Image (cartoon, rainbow, N blue to C red; front, top):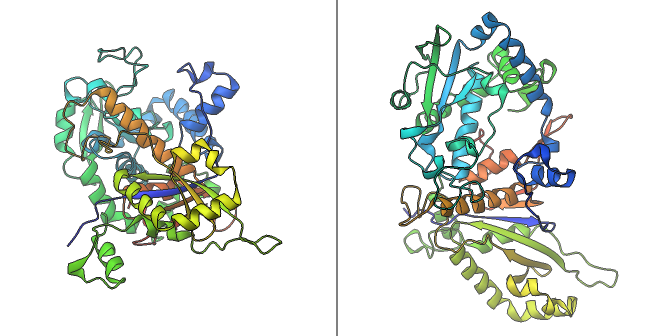
Length: 459
């Protein structure tokens, strides 16, 4: 059976903004405008949608426990250690989705979540992280940053106090031993001695594949209402107040079969499928439900869209766009020229392909500015490194991928699918919590193909 080889996502943007990067790394020393820029472009969600009270409450509680040793020890008697480095060769969405599973699992099991990153000899990445070397932090030909940076996955995310509770990892084992023990998920944990506190701590230690496997196994139990006390405790561990937790029950691999179904539904036999992926045009047809507006004279009005395409094969997608433009060239040119006689002088239109689609949608396409030689942050594939790769080049791919995620997360409309980690992560990021039933809303998402049911976070 054929396997889809291309993933892409389409977003409709209301416009683009030119951004000047702040000149200082310290958010506290930035001007108000720089702080706004910093907050806008360093998070996948607008910070207005994040309840900062959760973190503030957690810091206050952690401060209390820091001065009350017995209570602190009890709070840290059982912990879950997640080792993200085992998934470092995966893409951003896969790594973040697995982290989300660790968060949900730790809070459900009523355990603080601690991240254990490799350091020293156990860290195999130049610059200390799979995400490469920021050029302004690493002097040329120097592997050591000018300022201390987090290692590994911690360079991408902020792991909050309300998840780790200020607990520490027992010093009973070195990193390589923890890594060996993380291969099998033991839900009962094991005792490990911490010489600093003189305590024995019950530890569950896990990493990517074992964690995902156990999460799938237990996910139905996690959302069932069979144990109301456990559900209430879980919501509180996730940062909810007691009042919010009381209403918590309201928030409850690519598919080759979908590709086969797509083509056989168009009268191709399974043995004669023309492509091993679903074509780009099918994604664009998700606009078919948008009727063309008509003005007072009865004329169809053009609707302009900036369309950002995130894909791991832009060469093929651009060829598909060129084919669509060639087919519709005469009609598209006439319609666009009638609509705006000066449009052909627009340098932006000359540098980005434009297409008249479905009679009234004028689509201008944008891609991220990579050199189209490699699109996976780890290399040509998840486990295939690039010959002659550098830490700086890895960082450039990392930033291009994060930019893709940022565009997809904040776009007005998203067209994609749930069969990849990107689509599943973006469904979580585009979720907005509200104060009225059903207490959540998802920004406009149009599913191009495959399953349309919403799974557990990450699944």
